[in-house]
Amino acid sequence: MVLSLVSFSPAVVVLYFLLGEFEGYFKDNKALFMMILGLGLGMIIGFFSLYFPIGYLSWALGIIALIEIVKFFILLQKPFRLNHDTTFYGTALGTGIGAMMVFVYSFAAGLVSLDLLTVLLVFFISYNYTLVNASTGAIIGYGCYTGEFWKYLSKGFILSAIHGSMMTFVWSFRFGRTGILAVLTIGGVYGTVLIFYVYNNIFPKTIPEEMKEIKE
Image 1 (cartoon, helix red, strand yellow):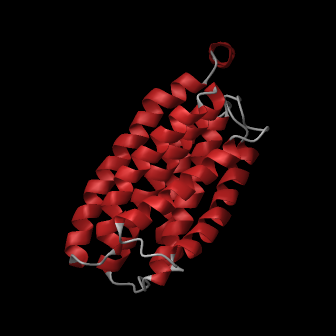
Image 2 (spheres, rainbow, N blue to C red):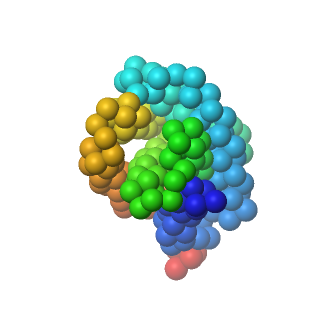
């Protein structure tokens, strides 16, 4: 129960505050569906990736490529392709994937105790994965909206790969919890920068001017 709350709380906060200001530019029920879809995909990918040593960079990058390609494939489908609101649905999709993968990883790693350090550890891991996956989901979604598919898929993969390289230090368990928290702090700052980039640079560009005028 505690593991669930800690794993999913950053996702709820991110969606509420990140998408809340842009309410009206997308369909709430569709965004909710995309988050639920993301949770399901996150569970599948999470369990699948447990068969590989994700503490090693090559395997970590392979899983990251899979995640971003899955986002891309879904957002490229007819209901989303070339539609402005796809950016927001990509955010919801990425948020769900990131949150559920953290839950799976944390449970598999035995991070289920209630001591403060474990709770903080799971929270920071979730914060990292949620922000980065929400950001890359938005970026890939924006590419599916503008038609610059490969450019933004590549951008999403590179940004996620940078973070994934940091996370190899977490999942290798070679540095102790204090060292892992230090890495997660750096990763959290990186994720925060990404989410602010999306908020300030991607979201405003995804809204057609005529829709802004109508809402105003």
